[in-house]
Length: 80
Image (cartoon, rainbow, N blue to C red; front, side, top):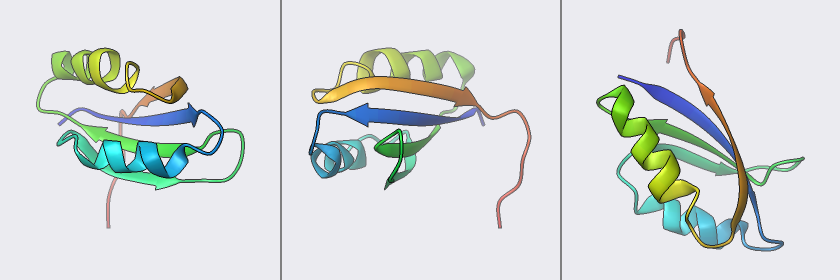
């Protein structure tokens, strides 16, 4: 199952509002408000690699109050 981690910068003070909008997307497995250069860290899971482009391009990057994203594709890992 293709997985990506997306770092998101939002408009100032919009972190929680964007977090609530992300909750509505079934492809978002996890989302966390964080401190630092980015405002949110999001884990996206999809059935097929092609679906990842759809989610990133047409859902996340077009969401209001998101200023920029940085996407990292997971290639290997584990979960507890």
